Image (tube, rainbow, N blue to C red; front, top):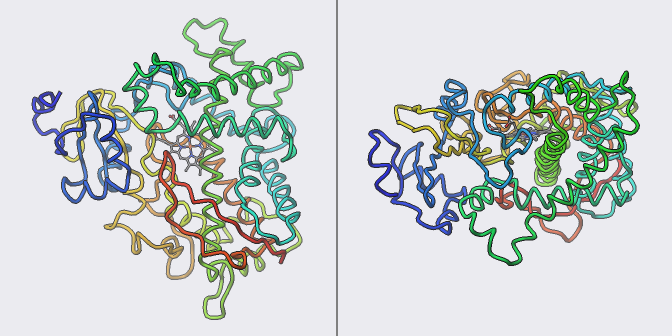
Length: 471
Ligand code: HEM
């Protein structure tokens, strides 16, 4: 295998080779920085018999994802889950059809009786009540945030939300988290797919699939209920919209809309939506603990989050999405949270759809591409203070909000995050509503929470506790 890449002229440089999966652990994404120092921004790795290319920095990532969007639009073949909704689907007709449908359906919510904004606002209120019920005592916010984020997805897909302590609801969230941790992530996907023989060895790793099968069973049950109670004239939610599409598709032999694909797609979206958004919000509150002067005004810095919310929204009404334009500082804090916490640090693996090139390097069709989003969000040639939490990255001299080209937490190009709009709404409405109602601080006798966290598939904070004092 070592010989193979020598045949290509101009193939990117890289370390000798990674004959065993164990070597993959070297690619633990602190590592691209070290590799970059030695090999440059575009690095080839050979992992098992697979060719992998890492792209680092704004220029390389942008060239691949934006300028050569279609060349990089495929995903690696994951033999284990052949037809997995949108996220892992190969680039082609099925993916296109499904992505178009899902985007337009999410945009039209609107489905049923409530708008998407209303659903998120309502959930933000519920989240606040749940925080209040802690009476200022220390707690880990993850459970409640995860429930609120999960509920928005439930509301969109199933038509209803659940109480946070509902057993079925928590079981479902738990399964999705488990499945996500096990399989949907970058590394384990690559590893498992490289070692299909692992599947034939009896042993504990077989449990790997239990959370999937269990989740699918729950979803199948929910779809069945939908079919029984559906009124064809009235679309209640995503599942109803999909069922309509299946009916229409009966005439179309090319169509990939099917009940199995519905289950996969819903599962896929829950996986993509809940962990990422939950973890981002956990980081946001953690940063409020670490940087109290961002949360609150300390005399010399005017316009901090609390003050800005008080001035623009006050205490009597709920924030709505239109407030965003009038809250530049708060908005900058949310953007900076996403930049600095760097949730999907290595992107989601892509594959080249045809022979192509980046920055003059040749990359053959079928190469696995890791777009190291971290290296863009912390690109030292772009950001003033790449390794610090610095909301001013998104503010101009007049304190107005500015967009930045290297802000790519949702990636770019035709496979970029499909839930960006939804995620933005949730981050803004949840964060603003919480900060309107509470001051967050570190519980007495507990250390300042760390901001390094751990990198497994996504970059999560170590678990921490906070106190939420009513304002
Ligand atoms: C894909 C980030 C929330 C649905 C992705 C990708 C990233 C990402 C980096 C990979 C794109 C690529 O390959 O270039 C995030 C972040 C989120 C978030 C940081 C929250 C803070 C959501 C939500 C949904 C969602 C709420 C649900 C509606 C998806 C889907 C894909 C995806 C379906 C696969 C797209 C495709 O392959 O065509 N996301 N995401 N994400 N995301 Fe998100």
